[in-house]
Image (tube, rainbow, N blue to C red; front, side, top):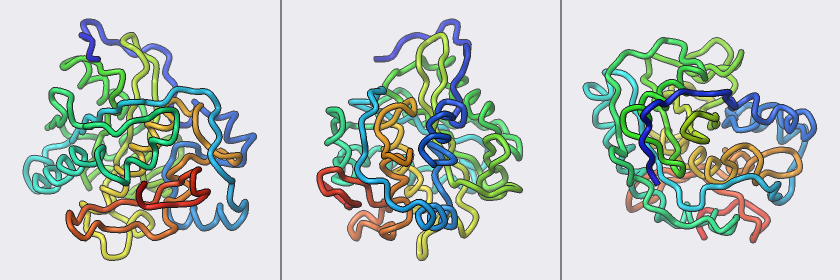
Length: 282
């Protein structure tokens, strides 16, 4: 349900890195809630192996989720307008697919029409900084909420242009000086409630691209990954394995992400406890 945001102000926040620091220390995951690059995925699995089925640690999930797509930067209405339109269409379709349905085995999560907020797509034509910090991503989510209200079931996904990169502490996305992740999700406590969000940097480097995918399909890989993880592990305290990895981290790059032959939308495999392995659909 939406609530008016008359006096939105972020209180003490829980960043993507800080929220689960003890979890990463104890469970061998050095970066909870960060989508690993291909290199990091291979290295970490080689060093620590599979983590078994997901375990419910009791934290919140989003039973009937929504997604607000925030396109930050003027290029999303000019050079990248077609890309933005494709991604908005992907989000509108995603919650009713078999790929999304895999996570309905966890905590009563349901298929959901994701793009139901008003507006479900928002263009902020201000120019983002080259280095978009986690605080800046949270600020962008807050900016939307201050204008349109808060939805406790929403994930505010902030898409960055190719002229910017994301940073979370010393770690960065494609385009940054310390490539470590492709995207990430997080949450922070604000006066309106627990805000769930995601940073969606432009997939401009090989470590975050799948062979044969175009820019839209690489972004779709990010959306499929971060949306399902934000739903199944909203605050970093719900579903993850004994190593600390969330559902999509376990299947991020292996098996190989795939394209639906009909829609041409891209997805990645998802961990299924029912199958004790990565599956396409359920």
